[in-house]
Length: 183
Ligand code: IMP
Ligand code: MG
Image (cartoon, rainbow, N blue to C red; front, side, top):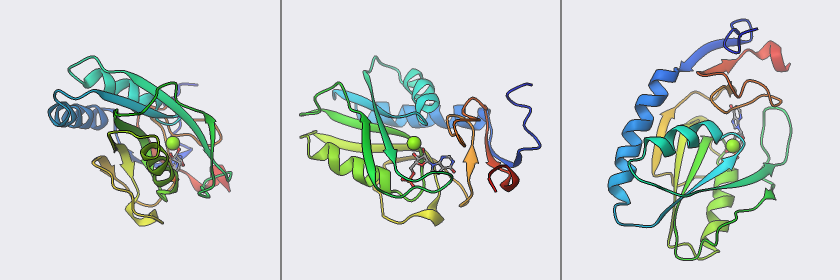
């Protein structure tokens, strides 16, 4: 089966591969200007941010280090709980670094607000967020997010790194998962 042949498992395609790539080029240009002359560190949140990190980092016009963090926000299925556990910590000392967290999606905002606080407590010079997707209607806490790709409706989506039960991450577009798949 082609990875993209999932038309019976999705309802709507929200963002296409082409729209994502165009947006990444725009945001990369902005980030390049904002961080000119600064020592930037990209931090990706595993595993969802793998695709956006790979494409975004290569859209930047200069050499930039990447580090990764794996957290689990407890809760299964399609909802997150806000109880965050570190599964893999950074390899980099954040002291005096300018950190840009690269995230796939801000849903409730609970994971990111926890991460922001955690990184600031490590003495980073600055901590900003780039999230490819955001669900404004799902926000439980406000997250200061400097760069946003697309605001999307409050529905469970898959593709471009986002999974349901570890599936669909390699789907190229972002699409709404059909409710019959998870109910
Ligand atoms: P938050 O803490 O609720 O903001 O979201 C935490 C994580 O849940 C995100 O980084 C995603 O990995 C995952 N997540 C949230 N919404 C979705 C979705 O619609 N599809 C797939 N994963 C999601
Ligand atoms: Mg994530």
